[in-house]
Image (cartoon, rainbow, N blue to C red; front, side, top):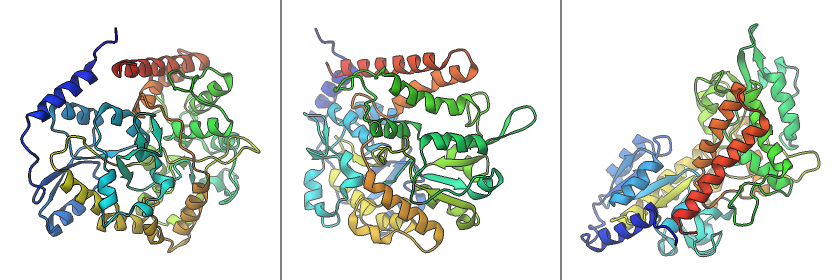
Amino acid sequence: MRRVTRVFLFLILATLLFAFAPAAVAQKGATVKFMSSAADLPDEWVAKFNKENPDGITIVRTELDYTKFVAEAMAGTASDLINMGQGTDVAYYAPRGLLLPITKYLQNSKVIKMADIDPLGNINYQFDVKSMTFGKGDWYGLTKDYNNVTAITYNKAMFKAAGIPELSETVPITYEELYGIVKKLTKKDASGKPTVWGTEPAFWLYCSSDMATASKLSVFADKDKTKMNNDPKVRDIWKYWARFSKEDLAPNINNPAPGWAGSDFQSDRVALVQLGYWFGAQMRSSPGVSEKYGWAPAPIAFKGAPRVTNTLGATGIVFYAKSKVPDAAFKVFEWYIGGAYGQERAKTGWGVPPLKSLAPLLPEGDKFDKSRKTIALDDAKYFQSWQSCPWIPADVWTKSWQGPLDAYCKGSINADQFVDQFYANMNKAIADSRAELGL
């Protein structure tokens, strides 16, 4: 007998709660709760919207926390709009009844035209629950923008000091070449402690997916994605990324970084990162960006391999299924995606915009912006969705990875045991999630 789990109890409870809940409040003058980081929804823009909005709608930003989102959804108090870090997570939340389909809203919108939606960046926000397929069925949101997240940004001075030529902006290097470059860029003191790391692979998961896709491999053992693939070639991909930390070429539990990959790079603690086009907008705070930093396209898996890049599903905005103010929330969504705020994001180059009509607004006033824009649009020709799993949200991969990686770096397990433990964590998480859905 299939067990009744907390997800089904939640759905039953939610149905009862909303069956007897008061009618939705008037949309005009409504308060719309928007779960997002301040970086993606700055306070000054919230204040600007609240002051200028003629419908009297008020935005209240709530802190980004997906565990809190699920808990509040169970209580019927979740935020109306949610910043979805990876669009592929729609496949996890939609079947659980947590997201509101917005196809009809989009079809009737005067701000967002269906024909204007860029399919390259938005495909993961259209999802068919029955077939568990992206690119068909209902729309659940749109990206705020999208990027070639595996493209390279590097410190030119550090390359010169290490005797490494600047990278081509048109011809990608291989991942094995990347490893060799990172080794040369890493600097250590007399005791062997890193003073400059060659890289900090924040997006190792998405890079791994590209490598597997280019090699015509699946990271899963079966078409339903219920278990990880033990093929030695797939295991070698995970080992490739683990060795950066193991060999002190990247921050690790033994020698942790003071910040995250972007801030460590900007403070000259890391020589090269793969963060993509959007990172250039953040780097505007660094002096002399055009002279100091270079850009290069996403690497390829091996010489002769096809180019493959991905957007990590692209960060975007979705709607809570039981929002009491969906009409007001959609007005905020229109402002955020295609209105004043969406236009401003495009002008500052935080990412390739979700609407094709906004693409001409991308900045290219200097060499720095021209370079990153050219590379981003070229990489976009090779976009393929990363090999996500519909049974788990993306953060489960990181949680499953980190413990085994720490043990590997400490020397308590070897490389194969690292992969074994990573797989055990992943397989359990997938099995538990499928059991919640009665599968």
